[in-house]
Length: 142
Image (tube, rainbow, N blue to C red; front, side, top):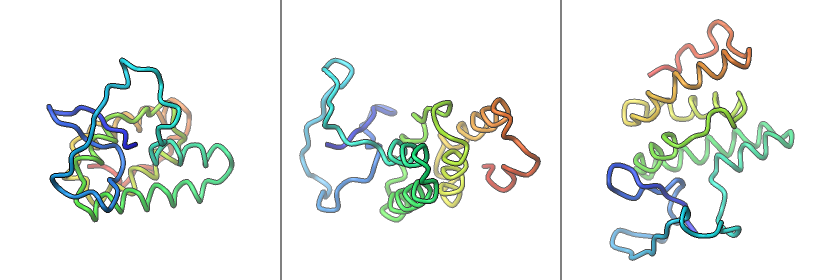
């Protein structure tokens, strides 16, 4: 099952679509808010990366972020990526994951409006955690 959000009147997936899904494929969309939690629903790649990071596998977590974001950008799924960025729970993510997301999305920054809003949220979170150092976000703006 693919998780998605409603954004700007449309449905935006939060992770890459299966490669065998092509334009015109009919899918069923449900409302998780009005149903029991689906324990079989797949985690987003961000949630998986955070879980890996918490388990001490920071390198694997960052690899997952870079690979997933790269796949979304290469497949032209910038709307999906932007929807994911718009719904990130910054307070729940580690500093390394947040910096990894900013780094991985940098090449598409001009096409990701949610990233422009996310950057100051991440900066605020880093300051609040005492993790903000001079230069830590240099070059990641935009």
